[in-house]
Length: 113
Length: 114
Image 1 (cartoon, each protein chain N blue to C red):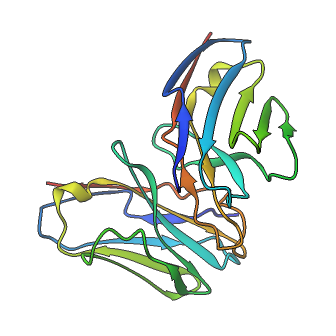
Image 2: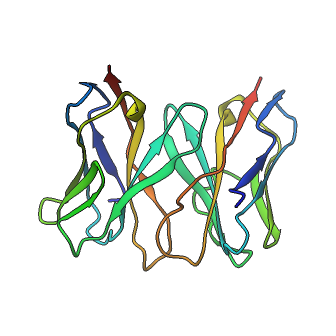
């Protein structure tokens, strides 16, 4: 019940295209859903996060879509750039019991110039 | 502002040796997290502290692992004795309060146990 499943494992997109990464969770008690970006040799950094009271959140080129009934959420990167090439992790937690994040397996995104 | 500081950045040791990883959280943050990242298991929370008190250590893999936070600006993760399967990148992160997740993780310590 603590799992977060992420797909695809890897993704190749052309510059200017849309990158879409999907996650599914099992624990209906989860109420905080962040996405992290990690470059090689660096620690993960928070990209954008959503709570289940909204179905979508947009920050610049990055959008989270959230479907509570399906227990799924996704990250959309519009106008993908080579600098977006990184590994992306979705995560989930139950904030009322502290910030124990459960991470997805990660998606390695490559944006070709 | 300085981010989370971790040391050492790289550690190579032999099986059976004691390893100590160090972390300095962001000033003013009162929750601190230790995560481990491996190819096989991804990112896993090992333990987190709030106000220097361990809140959840259920992710600590076994008794060989121990963590302390003697004050608000310093934490250690110790492995004794170390084993090759402990080879991983260990990240530290901190947040103000308890809710939400870290904005930034530390740079990590890459541990290799031979």
